Image 1 (tube, one colour):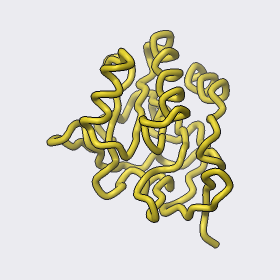
Image 2 (cartoon, helix red, strand yellow; image 1 turned 120 degrees about the horizontal axis):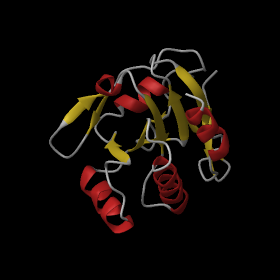
Image 3 (cartoon, rainbow, N blue to C red; image 1 turned 30 degrees about the vertical axis):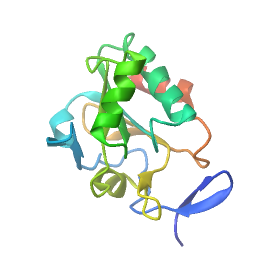
Image 4 (cartoon, rainbow, N blue to C red; image 1 turned 90 degrees about the vertical axis):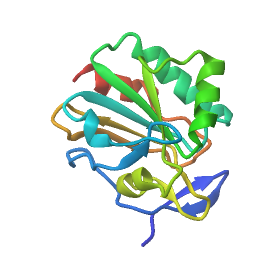
Length: 168
């Protein structure tokens, strides 16, 4: 049976595995900017929050990114990363307009092939974006929190995500 998410009630099929707490965090290649990629494994060994959003140009995605950016200043031992299918120049424009600095929250692009989304089970092949999801990865590179938000237009459970990250 295919896994799905919904957008305003309309089902969209997801590609990739449904990850669970306790699974090893998959590696994937993401884009740091228009010309440079990096494997997620470069971040291994530290606590990190992967905040996955469909597009920073939508209100819920923008709010989710700003909420985690604000939380990042109080959690110095946690690396916050937003991952979207937006092109890197659009991500840079958003961060500049919102005053989001990379020292508190890194923004990575999954626009080229959806490698992150396919590894983490968030990729929506019919539209080439990721569903809304949040993953907290421990310093041992094990998933400690996994949330696939069933409806793309809804927010994740911010309190649960931050409580998990604080506990690591």
